[in-house]
Length: 279
Image (tube, rainbow, N blue to C red; front, side):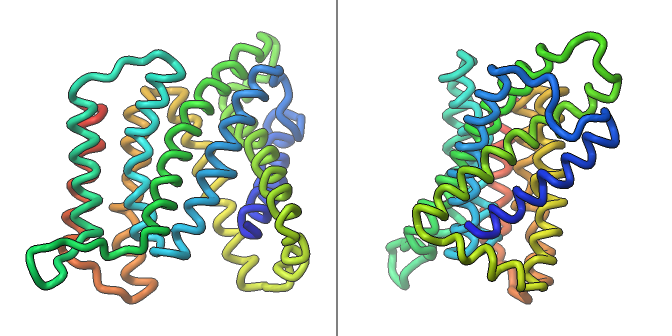
């Protein structure tokens, strides 16, 4: 909770500076009520719910398995698109969902010495991983709607850089709402004193700073840019490569051996994601 509040607060500072330099306004100018509404909903679903689940999932089962569950984000995004935007789902979508779930099952199931399979991860971590994938997928669809409303509200005489900066301005709205949501949750849990003490943790703040730059500032903004300029399914598929990209760095940083079945599980899950959108 503390890390999310700090990273979203820092993200607003960085994004404000970026917008000020590029378009002359340190805030998301031109955004109308519809853009704020949809982007706020995406922040509540994607940040407050999804990232809360993801960060707690990291604590419970680690980043490697946490990112594996994020391969469910594209299928969840497609389902949300069907419900919210009226997009169609074919039988291939069901097959792809089954393949993706099979890949996750390969990674988290193990034999108990007999002919029975047991889950090698705690149930809490699995549920948090599912919640993280759900929040990421649904939040992406809500973001796409919000960005489109934002783009429609930008006047013709707006600065030329506004077209490029639109995803960053949208991310600032999401960071503002998401940060406020986490602050509200912390206040309800009487956890605000932790914010003050965390500022004295220099090592922790350094990693929060790095997390902010690669997460909400660059990562989220570029994801919104991706869904604006290309098909959401293709963008989601590429963003779901995280479980593949994280294997080698994770093994190096934490000095943990990556088992073959985990690599196989990631490969199968990614195949399912590709089937979902590329067939």
